Length: 505
Image (cartoon, rainbow, N blue to C red; front, side):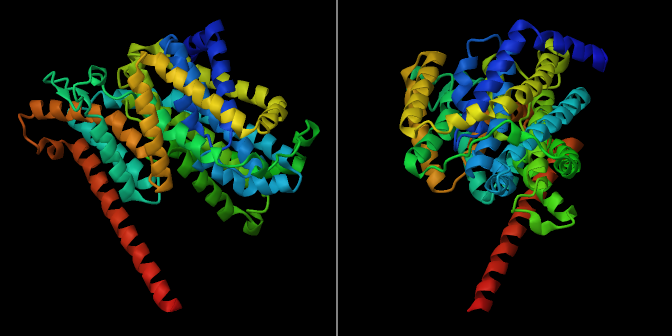
């Protein structure tokens, strides 16, 4: 089928009554939770996951994807109005968004970021629809060795490139891989690390762990903030939203540049929206005639990062759907949910389930249009939500989360896992460990083990098959290059810091 026939098939799913309804619910709930201070897309998806478990898989994915980009969309509102970033990529938007709000231009900042997000999302959707099939066709040539090496590359890249403490991130990946061993061994049928508890035979609950690591710690951290100490958002009127001709002129090129940067980085393992947002901001600062205006309310400083973030959100689905390998923690969570619904993304996914794939792609288009149509007139409503006292809001969130977790498997053990990983997530937050690599390790661990064992069986136990196969060798070489580059960068940074302290003394 050609592109237009495929999109027609996708639109028939996305524009059905159920498709529109679940997309609407997803983007609305995602924006609502994304607007809450401290809760970014990761926490939003984790907390709202249980809502999708008793829904048809196609519409569950449409709803979940809507929650994802709806939460990414909602995060910009708190960044601009309150100087609070729910996630790392929103931290770039607040650099110039909050100064614009302080200058009385919050409405313009919100409107421009809405348009930038829409344009970036549309460009990402076009690339997703164009390149996923080609990548899936190429992946059909992969054997177990290539899959194992590629997954290992994705894990290492995510750990080393996504944070400031790469070796701590690698430790978290290893912890996640260890957690993935809990349950029944598929090869031998033996129970591993279940301690005689039958509820653990299927492994630890991914949803409970995800919410525990990303949802509850944010609630705990913000629950300690007194309501009177919260910054008060300014009132937004529809008239204040309208940008001037000069604003459009200044924002047009940054939106396109940001979309291109976001589309590229979104499809790479271990980078995603965070790297794309920071990179696009740096590019705009470099090409600007007057770089000194950045940080003081430059419209380019909000347009480019938002376009980059949303295009990265869409293109992040390319490796996840066509290869079955998530490029970032959010995609790992999405992949885990697909597996729960007995959906196995990979090279055969697009050809085997075209309705699901193209329905999902078409729903991105519908969802992005919904976000623009709904959010511009509803900005004043989201601002009112920011006035709800924490003492009322957070107990409701925790209660809904616990009910949702229990409703997935009707097991009390899942609630215990939720609370334990909630405490662990809060401790990791205090110790400045990143929890995201742990989730990547947990999701990819069983798949890596399966492919490693298959490779060993095919090669008769010969480890050299990972090196003698050209593609696998290239992936492994990339891993060693990343490790060497990280070690060298860390050594150079320490040496530079030591020489600076010696000079100052």
